[in-house]
Amino acid sequence: MQEKLSELFITQYQALLGVAFQLTRSEDDALDLMQDLAESIARNDRPASSIEHPMAFFRTCLRHARINALKKSDREIPSEPEVFSQIPSGDSVEDSAVGAAAMAWLRAELAAYSPEMREAFYLYYFDGYSLDEVAKKLNLNKNTLSQRFVRIRGKLVRNAADQSLFFALMVLFLLKPR
Amino acid sequence: MKQRMSQQKARNTIRAQLYRADDLFVRSEKEAVTLAAQCTVSARALVMRAEAKSDLPAESWAGFYRALDEADQRALGGWRARLHDAMRALQKHRRAALTSLILAVILAFFTLVPTGRAIAEGIFDYVISVFGSQLQIDQTDEKTLYEQRGYDEPDVLTQDQIAEYGYDADGNLIMEKEPVYYNSVAAFESATGLDAVELVSDQLKCVEVMENNNIVTGKSLRTNYRTNDDLSVNLIEKWYKGDGQTVSFNGEIKQKTVLDGKPMQYAIDTETGAFDGVVLLDDSILVIYADKGVDLDLIWKLLS
Image (cartoon, rainbow over the protein chains, first blue to last red):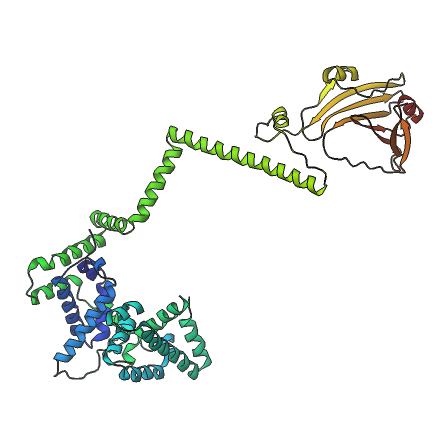
């Protein structure tokens, strides 16, 4: 009677496919990632409750599968991601507020991270694990992680403030405690 | 908590546009979601493709197909899928469900089952009696406090008083009984054993003798006399039980000795010209009202 991972995969199919599209340039690649994930689940289809964060677990699996695929594919030809006419163009207000400059800073910040800290970043910001869970998984100091992530948030707010007061207020509103 | 929520918002913002910070990600979350919605490959087709590519036995994929069938049933509104969902929700929230069930059973027992209803009534009566006793205790404490501070003691209704007056149909304590009418003052005295003041004169005719009983102030007798000129003289005698009574006059207050040496305060009302007097007797208070024009010498003579 307990929900199994296979069932969660089916009910969250669209959401997981969206995650796959974030990681891949084409629909075929996205579907390949999803197939890999389905096979991983089929190998050990257990109750979803046996995993603390099943959706975070699925995101991690998809991300790792993509990294492995990229490592294997030395012959991969860099190409622009597929563009679909129906996708609305332009950034959202939220995107604009954070700004390209802030994300460029984040790119540099990530480049300076150790592989371990980079994985922690992915686990927290992309996969959706909590700070405690990330610290436990990677056997890292929670305070170290917290300081790094607070720094990222602070930088984004400051960057928005540099752009304009309106953007600063917008970011503060978006990031304010609820 | 606030910091955590703030971080959560930051996390969502960063996740939405990770492609700007890391080459691993090729498009924004929003764009990816749109692409996923446009993808024509169904979950069933994807699972079948994955199974075809895989070397795993068919049993390994049974969970996926079962879930796909249930999803189809759910989409068609099938009762099995709904039952399955309900059972799952029940299992997920079993603690809340069990608590609700126990509360419902207890409520049903105390409202629907005769035995339970009797128990509930017993508990209710007990609570009411305890509450009533508490009130009594509070009043007693208040009385002690008044004594300590030298105030007039507050009136405390005794159980005898409450029993004597009883409750009306709505359950409210009766504060004043229906008036009792007598043919004469003597009839009142005979019925109550009290000694009441009576004006006896051939110039006055007793037209009404009415007894009033108030749970707080006690018994009083109102006697109405008419003069030959049809003027009214009212005597109100109060066998007063309560706190001190305030007496006020609308006119110059004078004093005259009546009824074997008792000082009566009286005044002629400046507006109506009526006589208004009060005298404190041994165990009662006597109040006299007389219309303007009544011979006051007659009053003094009758009260001498």
